[in-house]
Image (cartoon, rainbow, N blue to C red; front, side, top):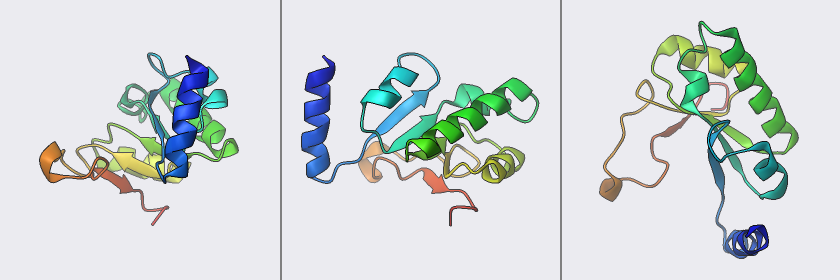
Length: 125
């Protein structure tokens, strides 16, 4: 129920919570949610990031998602950054944050805050 979800998110936002739309571009994360849900972070699914250096369609998808996120005032996070070249390209494209083995290894949940492995890309620092 979208109305209940919006009411809950509004209540939590007033308490200082921020929201991320995870795995954007795949599964249940759709453009309809972008219009309706008050999200702060847009996490670009690793499916589009893994082959971005060699696939112009993936590069176009990431750039389009970044631009839409910017228009909506959302901060972008790219998942699955596995090497320096991918990180450099995403930085040049204007992606705000990155997540993946190149930036930080996953930490056990009991020892780390929820987004401790999300790293600001050089253009953001």
